[in-house]
Image (cartoon, rainbow, N blue to C red; front, side, top):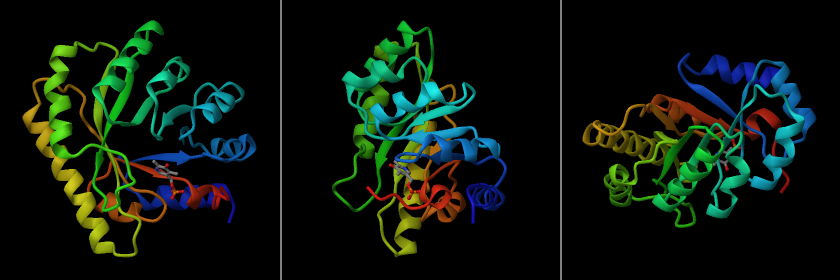
Length: 222
Ligand SMILES: *Cc1c(COP(=O)(O)O)cnc(C)c1O
């Protein structure tokens, strides 16, 4: 199967309102253009260096999503063009995104990453840390970041029930945050969950944005 067939299969699999982020990390500009020519416009990368090399040589109407762990000192490289940052896990990082977005006269959408998996290695906030950030927000007076929703990664396991439980948990955290902080959230609508191995479950559990790489571009050898 080629890239366009795979893309079409995924798109026909998911409901209309669910966005597909084509995760192109480690993949060549040629492969990205193949997806682009099928109509795909949202692409995700998780290395700053790689993204800033690819961005200038690819079409302007690509919506770039940064999906990896982001260090504060690298925000400045992405701020001129990145559309959404998926894995924000501290108020310090938000403050830097706000500052660099302001310098570029932009508003950058951010998702707060919640730790829902079993594994200790995965980044993300627990519910208490998430609530602490939300409580801090009014004092910070950020004008150039938009808190657009939450992101999470399920445990890498064959146990579908466990994956489903973890996604369901993220959805319920999303609802609680939405309720409790409705006065300060004006565009809290995205729930970024689901990858190649688990996106059908994520969509059933309320994902609005899936991040799919290997199922579109083939496996990565890194
Ligand atoms: C690599 C990556 C993906 C895509 O993974 P696949 O299993 O190839 O679909 C999704 N989300 C994040 C955060 C990633 O780093």
